[in-house]
Figure 1 (cartoon, rainbow, N blue to C red):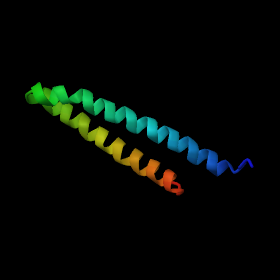
Figure 2 (cartoon, rainbow, N blue to C red):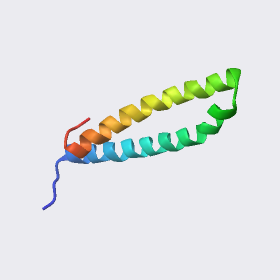
Figure 3 (tube, rainbow, N blue to C red):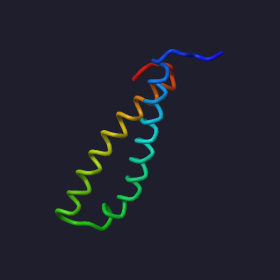
Figure 4 (cartoon, one colour):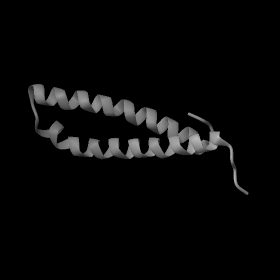
Length: 74
């Protein structure tokens, strides 16, 4: 039986986007490890600020994705 509830499509779309955002942010974190290891001064501060932005994206995306997986709208 097909579910024609548009709310479910929206939740599915949001889950797909949240998953893509989370995967992308996690991959970027891995790429930034070398910068944290080797940079100094302003370059290091720029990397740390960027990581802080990624932290926000990861928190928001993981919470939304977990909510959809559990059956709640995020």
